Length: 458
Image 1 (tube, rainbow, N blue to C red):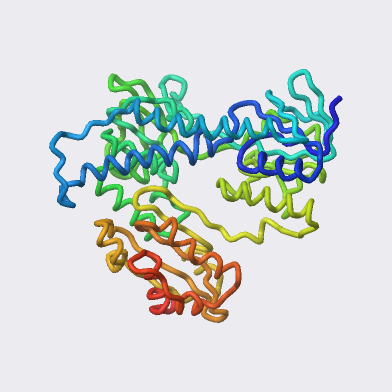
Image 2: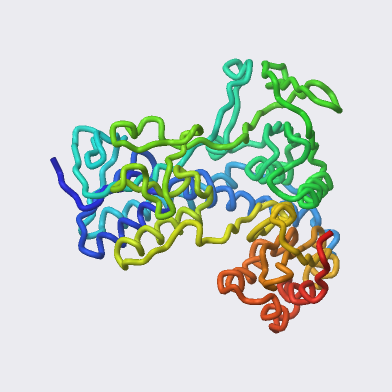
Protein backbone atom coordinates (compact mmCIF):
# COMPACT_ATOMS: atom_id res chain seq x y z
CA UNK A 1 0.00 0.00 0.00
CA UNK A 2 1.26 3.48 -0.94
CA UNK A 3 0.82 6.02 1.86
CA UNK A 4 0.25 9.74 1.31
CA UNK A 5 -0.61 12.82 3.32
CA UNK A 6 -3.20 13.77 0.71
CA UNK A 7 -4.99 11.93 -2.08
CA UNK A 8 -6.72 14.10 -4.68
CA UNK A 9 -9.22 12.51 -7.06
CA UNK A 10 -9.79 14.60 -10.21
CA UNK A 11 -7.87 17.31 -12.03
CA UNK A 12 -10.48 20.02 -12.51
CA UNK A 13 -9.87 23.57 -11.38
CA UNK A 14 -9.44 22.74 -7.69
CA UNK A 15 -7.39 19.54 -7.70
CA UNK A 16 -4.15 20.50 -9.47
CA UNK A 17 -3.77 23.81 -7.61
CA UNK A 18 -4.37 22.03 -4.32
CA UNK A 19 -1.80 19.39 -5.24
CA UNK A 20 0.77 22.08 -5.95
CA UNK A 21 0.06 23.97 -2.75
CA UNK A 22 0.20 20.89 -0.52
CA UNK A 23 3.24 19.41 -2.25
CA UNK A 24 5.12 22.68 -1.94
CA UNK A 25 4.29 22.65 1.76
CA UNK A 26 6.18 19.36 2.05
CA UNK A 27 3.26 16.95 2.02
CA UNK A 28 3.35 13.70 0.08
CA UNK A 29 0.54 13.96 -2.49
CA UNK A 30 -1.14 11.60 -4.94
CA UNK A 31 -3.45 12.90 -7.66
CA UNK A 32 -5.67 10.61 -9.74
CA UNK A 33 -7.21 11.27 -13.16
CA UNK A 34 -9.20 8.77 -15.23
CA UNK A 35 -9.64 10.91 -18.34
CA UNK A 36 -8.18 14.09 -19.75
CA UNK A 37 -6.35 16.42 -17.43
CA UNK A 38 -7.96 19.77 -16.74
CA UNK A 39 -11.54 18.71 -16.12
CA UNK A 40 -14.63 20.17 -17.74
CA UNK A 41 -13.35 23.73 -18.04
CA UNK A 42 -10.32 22.85 -20.11
CA UNK A 43 -11.76 20.01 -22.18
CA UNK A 44 -15.50 20.60 -22.66
CA UNK A 45 -16.35 23.90 -21.01
CA UNK A 46 -14.75 27.31 -20.76
CA UNK A 47 -11.67 26.91 -22.94
CA UNK A 48 -13.26 25.24 -25.98
CA UNK A 49 -16.61 27.02 -25.90
CA UNK A 50 -15.14 30.49 -25.53
CA UNK A 51 -12.73 29.68 -28.35
CA UNK A 52 -15.68 28.73 -30.54
CA UNK A 53 -17.58 31.83 -29.42
CA UNK A 54 -14.59 33.90 -30.54
CA UNK A 55 -14.86 32.38 -34.02
CA UNK A 56 -18.60 33.07 -34.02
CA UNK A 57 -17.96 36.69 -33.01
CA UNK A 58 -15.64 37.16 -35.98
CA UNK A 59 -18.25 35.58 -38.27
CA UNK A 60 -20.89 38.00 -36.97
CA UNK A 61 -18.52 40.92 -37.47
CA UNK A 62 -18.05 39.92 -41.11
CA UNK A 63 -21.81 39.61 -41.52
CA UNK A 64 -22.23 43.16 -40.18
CA UNK A 65 -19.18 44.60 -41.92
CA UNK A 66 -21.16 46.91 -44.22
CA UNK A 67 -22.67 48.67 -41.16
CA UNK A 68 -19.15 49.84 -40.32
CA UNK A 69 -18.23 50.86 -43.84
CA UNK A 70 -16.23 47.72 -44.52
CA UNK A 71 -17.00 46.05 -47.85
CA UNK A 72 -16.42 42.31 -48.02
CA UNK A 73 -16.20 41.39 -51.69
CA UNK A 74 -16.90 37.66 -51.39
CA UNK A 75 -19.63 35.81 -49.47
CA UNK A 76 -18.51 34.63 -46.06
CA UNK A 77 -17.74 30.93 -45.74
CA UNK A 78 -17.20 28.91 -42.59
CA UNK A 79 -14.32 26.44 -42.52
CA UNK A 80 -15.61 24.31 -39.65
CA UNK A 81 -12.66 21.87 -39.63
CA UNK A 82 -10.38 24.87 -39.15
CA UNK A 83 -12.65 26.30 -36.43
CA UNK A 84 -12.44 22.95 -34.62
CA UNK A 85 -8.69 22.67 -35.16
CA UNK A 86 -8.11 26.05 -33.54
CA UNK A 87 -10.21 25.01 -30.58
CA UNK A 88 -8.52 21.61 -30.32
CA UNK A 89 -5.06 23.16 -30.32
CA UNK A 90 -5.86 25.42 -27.38
CA UNK A 91 -7.49 22.59 -25.44
CA UNK A 92 -4.61 20.21 -26.08
CA UNK A 93 -2.03 22.75 -25.01
CA UNK A 94 -3.88 23.42 -21.75
CA UNK A 95 -4.59 19.77 -20.95
CA UNK A 96 -1.11 18.52 -21.79
CA UNK A 97 0.46 21.43 -19.94
CA UNK A 98 -1.54 20.54 -16.83
CA UNK A 99 -0.45 16.91 -16.98
CA UNK A 100 3.20 17.73 -17.60
CA UNK A 101 3.26 20.16 -14.68
CA UNK A 102 1.66 17.66 -12.30
CA UNK A 103 4.08 14.91 -13.32
CA UNK A 104 7.06 17.22 -12.76
CA UNK A 105 5.84 18.41 -9.36
CA UNK A 106 8.06 17.33 -6.46
CA UNK A 107 6.31 15.32 -3.71
CA UNK A 108 3.45 14.52 -6.10
CA UNK A 109 2.62 11.21 -7.79
CA UNK A 110 0.18 11.00 -10.71
CA UNK A 111 -2.06 7.97 -11.16
CA UNK A 112 -4.18 7.30 -14.26
CA UNK A 113 -7.37 5.32 -13.84
CA UNK A 114 -10.75 5.25 -12.12
CA UNK A 115 -10.60 5.74 -8.36
CA UNK A 116 -12.84 4.07 -5.80
CA UNK A 117 -12.97 4.68 -2.07
CA UNK A 118 -12.62 1.54 0.05
CA UNK A 119 -13.03 3.54 3.27
CA UNK A 120 -12.45 7.13 4.38
CA UNK A 121 -8.65 6.72 4.17
CA UNK A 122 -8.17 4.17 1.39
CA UNK A 123 -8.49 4.47 -2.40
CA UNK A 124 -8.14 1.81 -5.07
CA UNK A 125 -7.01 2.91 -8.54
CA UNK A 126 -6.34 0.11 -11.00
CA UNK A 127 -4.09 -2.42 -9.26
CA UNK A 128 -2.81 0.15 -6.74
CA UNK A 129 -4.15 0.74 -3.24
CA UNK A 130 -3.45 4.14 -1.72
CA UNK A 131 -3.79 5.26 1.88
CA UNK A 132 -4.17 8.94 2.73
CA UNK A 133 -4.53 11.06 5.85
CA UNK A 134 -6.92 13.25 3.89
CA UNK A 135 -8.83 12.68 0.65
CA UNK A 136 -10.03 15.45 -1.66
CA UNK A 137 -12.72 14.81 -4.26
CA UNK A 138 -12.66 17.04 -7.35
CA UNK A 139 -14.56 14.76 -9.71
CA UNK A 140 -16.76 17.31 -11.48
CA UNK A 141 -19.92 16.53 -13.42
CA UNK A 142 -21.29 15.50 -16.80
CA UNK A 143 -24.25 16.45 -19.01
CA UNK A 144 -27.62 15.20 -17.85
CA UNK A 145 -29.43 13.06 -20.42
CA UNK A 146 -33.15 12.97 -19.57
CA UNK A 147 -35.06 9.71 -19.91
CA UNK A 148 -37.36 10.91 -22.65
CA UNK A 149 -39.48 8.50 -24.67
CA UNK A 150 -37.53 7.71 -27.83
CA UNK A 151 -34.17 8.90 -26.49
CA UNK A 152 -32.60 5.59 -27.54
CA UNK A 153 -33.95 5.83 -31.09
CA UNK A 154 -32.32 9.10 -32.17
CA UNK A 155 -28.81 10.52 -32.27
CA UNK A 156 -28.23 13.44 -29.95
CA UNK A 157 -25.43 15.76 -28.89
CA UNK A 158 -24.39 17.13 -25.50
CA UNK A 159 -22.02 19.97 -24.67
CA UNK A 160 -19.27 17.32 -24.58
CA UNK A 161 -19.96 15.62 -27.92
CA UNK A 162 -20.44 19.05 -29.55
CA UNK A 163 -16.69 19.42 -29.11
CA UNK A 164 -16.13 16.64 -31.66
CA UNK A 165 -18.12 17.97 -34.61
CA UNK A 166 -16.33 19.67 -37.49
CA UNK A 167 -19.36 20.37 -39.69
CA UNK A 168 -22.22 22.82 -39.76
CA UNK A 169 -25.60 21.37 -38.76
CA UNK A 170 -28.31 22.41 -41.18
CA UNK A 171 -30.82 22.88 -38.37
CA UNK A 172 -29.72 22.61 -34.73
CA UNK A 173 -32.55 21.97 -32.31
CA UNK A 174 -31.56 22.75 -28.71
CA UNK A 175 -33.61 21.36 -25.84
CA UNK A 176 -32.92 23.65 -22.89
CA UNK A 177 -33.05 27.43 -22.79
CA UNK A 178 -30.42 28.16 -20.17
CA UNK A 179 -26.77 29.16 -20.19
CA UNK A 180 -25.19 26.28 -22.15
CA UNK A 181 -27.99 26.01 -24.70
CA UNK A 182 -28.10 29.73 -25.42
CA UNK A 183 -24.36 30.05 -25.91
CA UNK A 184 -24.33 27.16 -28.39
CA UNK A 185 -27.48 28.45 -30.07
CA UNK A 186 -26.09 31.88 -30.85
CA UNK A 187 -22.71 30.43 -31.76
CA UNK A 188 -24.08 28.05 -34.39
CA UNK A 189 -26.56 30.56 -35.74
CA UNK A 190 -23.63 32.87 -36.44
CA UNK A 191 -21.77 30.01 -38.09
CA UNK A 192 -24.76 29.63 -40.42
CA UNK A 193 -27.02 26.95 -38.94
CA UNK A 194 -30.73 27.39 -38.53
CA UNK A 195 -31.34 27.22 -34.77
CA UNK A 196 -34.41 26.49 -32.65
CA UNK A 197 -34.32 26.63 -28.86
CA UNK A 198 -37.00 24.73 -26.92
CA UNK A 199 -37.54 25.63 -23.25
CA UNK A 200 -40.16 23.96 -21.08
CA UNK A 201 -40.41 26.92 -18.70
CA UNK A 202 -42.27 30.17 -19.37
CA UNK A 203 -39.04 32.04 -20.17
CA UNK A 204 -35.36 31.59 -20.90
CA UNK A 205 -32.81 31.33 -18.06
CA UNK A 206 -35.54 31.39 -15.43
CA UNK A 207 -33.11 31.84 -12.52
CA UNK A 208 -32.60 35.39 -13.79
CA UNK A 209 -34.99 38.32 -13.41
CA UNK A 210 -37.79 38.55 -15.96
CA UNK A 211 -36.37 41.68 -17.60
CA UNK A 212 -33.06 39.92 -18.16
CA UNK A 213 -34.75 36.86 -19.65
CA UNK A 214 -36.74 39.12 -21.97
CA UNK A 215 -33.63 41.08 -22.94
CA UNK A 216 -31.67 37.95 -23.80
CA UNK A 217 -34.57 36.54 -25.81
CA UNK A 218 -34.88 39.78 -27.76
CA UNK A 219 -31.17 39.71 -28.59
CA UNK A 220 -31.30 36.11 -29.80
CA UNK A 221 -34.51 36.63 -31.76
CA UNK A 222 -32.90 39.59 -33.55
CA UNK A 223 -30.44 37.09 -35.02
CA UNK A 224 -33.29 34.89 -36.26
CA UNK A 225 -32.97 32.23 -33.58
CA UNK A 226 -36.37 30.59 -33.08
CA UNK A 227 -37.38 30.51 -29.42
CA UNK A 228 -40.07 28.15 -28.12
CA UNK A 229 -40.96 28.65 -24.44
CA UNK A 230 -43.68 26.87 -22.48
CA UNK A 231 -42.83 23.89 -24.67
CA UNK A 232 -42.09 20.67 -22.84
CA UNK A 233 -40.22 18.03 -24.80
CA UNK A 234 -42.25 14.84 -24.33
CA UNK A 235 -40.91 12.47 -26.99
CA UNK A 236 -38.19 12.01 -29.60
CA UNK A 237 -38.40 10.05 -32.82
CA UNK A 238 -36.43 9.61 -36.03
CA UNK A 239 -37.30 11.87 -38.95
CA UNK A 240 -36.12 12.03 -42.58
CA UNK A 241 -34.51 15.36 -41.66
CA UNK A 242 -32.70 13.76 -38.72
CA UNK A 243 -34.77 13.94 -35.54
CA UNK A 244 -38.23 15.06 -34.53
CA UNK A 245 -39.26 16.39 -31.12
CA UNK A 246 -42.86 16.21 -29.95
CA UNK A 247 -43.87 19.07 -27.70
CA UNK A 248 -46.50 19.77 -25.09
CA UNK A 249 -46.91 23.47 -25.73
CA UNK A 250 -49.34 26.36 -25.41
CA UNK A 251 -48.41 28.00 -28.71
CA UNK A 252 -46.77 26.90 -31.92
CA UNK A 253 -46.49 23.63 -33.76
CA UNK A 254 -46.61 20.44 -31.65
CA UNK A 255 -43.55 19.00 -33.42
CA UNK A 256 -40.20 20.33 -34.56
CA UNK A 257 -37.94 18.47 -36.99
CA UNK A 258 -34.25 19.22 -37.29
CA UNK A 259 -31.03 17.75 -38.62
CA UNK A 260 -29.32 17.65 -35.21
CA UNK A 261 -30.39 17.64 -31.58
CA UNK A 262 -28.46 19.17 -28.67
CA UNK A 263 -29.56 18.30 -25.14
CA UNK A 264 -28.70 21.16 -22.78
CA UNK A 265 -30.82 20.36 -19.74
CA UNK A 266 -28.35 20.56 -16.89
CA UNK A 267 -25.61 18.45 -15.36
CA UNK A 268 -25.18 15.65 -12.85
CA UNK A 269 -22.21 15.05 -10.53
CA UNK A 270 -19.72 12.25 -11.15
CA UNK A 271 -20.35 10.66 -7.78
CA UNK A 272 -22.20 7.44 -8.57
CA UNK A 273 -19.13 5.19 -8.98
CA UNK A 274 -16.79 6.49 -6.27
CA UNK A 275 -17.71 4.15 -3.44
CA UNK A 276 -18.83 7.03 -1.26
CA UNK A 277 -20.99 4.87 1.00
CA UNK A 278 -18.01 2.77 2.04
CA UNK A 279 -16.23 5.95 3.11
CA UNK A 280 -19.19 7.33 5.05
CA UNK A 281 -19.65 10.19 2.58
CA UNK A 282 -23.27 11.22 2.11
CA UNK A 283 -24.88 12.72 -0.99
CA UNK A 284 -28.12 14.63 -1.43
CA UNK A 285 -31.12 13.56 -3.50
CA UNK A 286 -29.43 14.79 -6.70
CA UNK A 287 -26.15 12.99 -6.05
CA UNK A 288 -24.15 16.04 -4.92
CA UNK A 289 -21.78 15.43 -2.03
CA UNK A 290 -22.90 17.04 1.21
CA UNK A 291 -20.31 19.43 2.62
CA UNK A 292 -20.12 21.94 5.46
CA UNK A 293 -19.00 25.54 5.14
CA UNK A 294 -15.35 24.43 5.06
CA UNK A 295 -16.03 21.79 2.39
CA UNK A 296 -15.66 18.78 4.67
CA UNK A 297 -17.98 15.89 3.90
CA UNK A 298 -19.75 13.69 6.45
CA UNK A 299 -16.40 11.89 6.73
CA UNK A 300 -14.36 14.72 8.32
CA UNK A 301 -11.05 13.84 6.64
CA UNK A 302 -12.70 13.73 3.18
CA UNK A 303 -13.34 16.99 1.34
CA UNK A 304 -15.36 17.70 -1.81
CA UNK A 305 -14.43 20.57 -4.11
CA UNK A 306 -15.80 21.91 -7.37
CA UNK A 307 -18.96 20.93 -9.21
CA UNK A 308 -19.49 17.68 -7.31
CA UNK A 309 -20.37 19.47 -4.04
CA UNK A 310 -23.31 21.45 -5.42
CA UNK A 311 -22.00 24.68 -3.90
CA UNK A 312 -21.10 26.28 -7.22
CA UNK A 313 -21.07 25.29 -10.87
CA UNK A 314 -18.28 27.46 -12.18
CA UNK A 315 -14.55 27.33 -12.72
CA UNK A 316 -14.05 30.29 -10.41
CA UNK A 317 -16.07 28.74 -7.56
CA UNK A 318 -14.10 25.50 -7.89
CA UNK A 319 -10.85 27.44 -7.68
CA UNK A 320 -12.17 29.32 -4.67
CA UNK A 321 -12.98 25.96 -3.06
CA UNK A 322 -9.28 25.11 -3.38
CA UNK A 323 -8.31 28.46 -1.83
CA UNK A 324 -10.66 27.92 1.12
CA UNK A 325 -9.38 24.42 1.85
CA UNK A 326 -5.70 25.28 1.39
CA UNK A 327 -5.81 28.40 3.56
CA UNK A 328 -7.70 26.61 6.31
CA UNK A 329 -5.33 23.64 6.36
CA UNK A 330 -2.02 25.40 5.86
CA UNK A 331 -2.55 28.86 7.35
CA UNK A 332 -5.02 28.18 10.14
CA UNK A 333 -7.60 30.40 8.46
CA UNK A 334 -11.33 30.10 8.93
CA UNK A 335 -12.58 30.71 5.43
CA UNK A 336 -16.08 29.53 4.51
CA UNK A 337 -18.05 28.98 1.33
CA UNK A 338 -20.71 31.41 2.57
CA UNK A 339 -18.13 34.21 2.56
CA UNK A 340 -18.10 34.44 -1.22
CA UNK A 341 -20.41 36.65 -3.25
CA UNK A 342 -22.10 34.95 -6.22
CA UNK A 343 -20.71 36.18 -9.51
CA UNK A 344 -20.94 34.67 -12.98
CA UNK A 345 -21.64 35.41 -16.63
CA UNK A 346 -23.66 34.21 -19.59
CA UNK A 347 -21.30 34.42 -22.56
CA UNK A 348 -23.73 35.25 -25.29
CA UNK A 349 -22.97 38.38 -27.31
CA UNK A 350 -23.53 40.74 -25.70
CA UNK A 351 -22.78 38.93 -22.44
CA UNK A 352 -24.61 39.06 -19.16
CA UNK A 353 -22.52 39.81 -16.07
CA UNK A 354 -24.15 39.08 -12.71
CA UNK A 355 -23.02 39.69 -9.14
CA UNK A 356 -24.79 39.37 -5.81
CA UNK A 357 -28.53 39.00 -5.43
CA UNK A 358 -31.13 39.44 -8.15
CA UNK A 359 -33.98 41.93 -8.12
CA UNK A 360 -36.40 39.10 -7.31
CA UNK A 361 -34.25 38.06 -4.35
CA UNK A 362 -34.05 41.67 -3.19
CA UNK A 363 -37.84 41.94 -3.23
CA UNK A 364 -38.15 38.79 -1.14
CA UNK A 365 -35.57 39.95 1.40
CA UNK A 366 -37.86 42.45 3.11
CA UNK A 367 -35.19 45.17 2.96
CA UNK A 368 -35.71 48.70 1.75
CA UNK A 369 -34.12 48.61 -1.69
CA UNK A 370 -32.85 51.28 -4.05
CA UNK A 371 -32.46 50.42 -7.72
CA UNK A 372 -30.65 52.06 -10.59
CA UNK A 373 -31.33 51.23 -14.24
CA UNK A 374 -29.70 52.35 -17.47
CA UNK A 375 -30.11 51.21 -21.08
CA UNK A 376 -26.87 50.43 -22.89
CA UNK A 377 -27.94 52.97 -25.50
CA UNK A 378 -26.80 55.64 -23.01
CA UNK A 379 -23.29 54.17 -22.91
CA UNK A 380 -21.04 55.96 -25.40
CA UNK A 381 -18.69 53.01 -25.77
CA UNK A 382 -21.59 50.73 -26.68
CA UNK A 383 -22.92 53.16 -29.30
CA UNK A 384 -19.47 53.66 -30.80
CA UNK A 385 -19.03 49.90 -31.15
CA UNK A 386 -22.48 49.54 -32.68
CA UNK A 387 -23.41 47.20 -29.81
CA UNK A 388 -25.95 49.18 -27.79
CA UNK A 389 -28.34 46.32 -26.99
CA UNK A 390 -29.14 45.48 -23.39
CA UNK A 391 -29.18 47.36 -20.10
CA UNK A 392 -27.59 47.52 -16.67
CA UNK A 393 -29.10 47.69 -13.20
CA UNK A 394 -27.82 47.83 -9.64
CA UNK A 395 -29.44 47.11 -6.26
CA UNK A 396 -28.56 48.95 -3.05
CA UNK A 397 -29.67 48.52 0.56
CA UNK A 398 -31.34 51.83 1.44
CA UNK A 399 -30.33 51.59 5.10
CA UNK A 400 -26.74 50.31 4.97
CA UNK A 401 -26.08 51.95 1.55
CA UNK A 402 -24.22 48.79 0.52
CA UNK A 403 -24.42 47.36 -2.99
CA UNK A 404 -26.35 44.10 -2.92
CA UNK A 405 -26.24 43.03 -6.54
CA UNK A 406 -25.99 44.08 -10.15
CA UNK A 407 -26.62 42.84 -13.68
CA UNK A 408 -25.07 44.15 -16.88
CA UNK A 409 -26.50 42.75 -20.10
CA UNK A 410 -24.44 44.49 -22.72
CA UNK A 411 -21.07 44.77 -24.39
CA UNK A 412 -18.32 44.27 -21.83
CA UNK A 413 -20.85 43.40 -19.14
CA UNK A 414 -18.89 40.34 -18.03
CA UNK A 415 -15.93 42.57 -17.20
CA UNK A 416 -17.68 45.76 -16.08
CA UNK A 417 -19.78 44.04 -13.42
CA UNK A 418 -16.61 42.99 -11.62
CA UNK A 419 -15.76 46.60 -10.83
CA UNK A 420 -18.37 46.35 -8.05
CA UNK A 421 -17.09 43.20 -6.36
CA UNK A 422 -14.38 44.72 -4.17
CA UNK A 423 -16.77 47.36 -2.84
CA UNK A 424 -19.23 44.58 -2.00
CA UNK A 425 -16.62 42.45 -0.22
CA UNK A 426 -15.44 45.53 1.65
CA UNK A 427 -19.00 46.47 2.67
CA UNK A 428 -18.36 49.96 1.33
CA UNK A 429 -21.21 52.44 0.79
CA UNK A 430 -22.23 52.78 -2.84
CA UNK A 431 -21.08 56.41 -2.78
CA UNK A 432 -17.45 55.22 -2.81
CA UNK A 433 -18.09 53.73 -6.24
CA UNK A 434 -20.30 56.62 -7.31
CA UNK A 435 -17.65 59.24 -6.56
CA UNK A 436 -14.80 57.35 -8.21
CA UNK A 437 -13.49 58.53 -11.57
CA UNK A 438 -13.56 55.99 -14.43
CA UNK A 439 -11.87 55.94 -17.81
CA UNK A 440 -13.79 57.37 -20.76
CA UNK A 441 -15.07 55.88 -22.98
CA UNK A 442 -15.78 52.60 -21.22
CA UNK A 443 -18.85 50.69 -20.07
CA UNK A 444 -17.75 50.97 -16.44
CA UNK A 445 -17.81 54.77 -16.46
CA UNK A 446 -21.63 54.75 -16.54
CA UNK A 447 -21.90 52.75 -13.31
CA UNK A 448 -21.33 55.85 -11.11
CA UNK A 449 -23.91 57.71 -13.19
CA UNK A 450 -26.39 54.88 -12.64
CA UNK A 451 -25.68 54.95 -8.90
CA UNK A 452 -26.44 58.66 -8.92
CA UNK A 453 -29.93 57.93 -10.25
CA UNK A 454 -31.09 55.41 -7.62
CA UNK A 455 -34.79 55.20 -6.87
CA UNK A 456 -36.82 53.17 -4.36
CA UNK A 457 -37.75 49.73 -5.63
CA UNK A 458 -41.52 49.52 -5.81
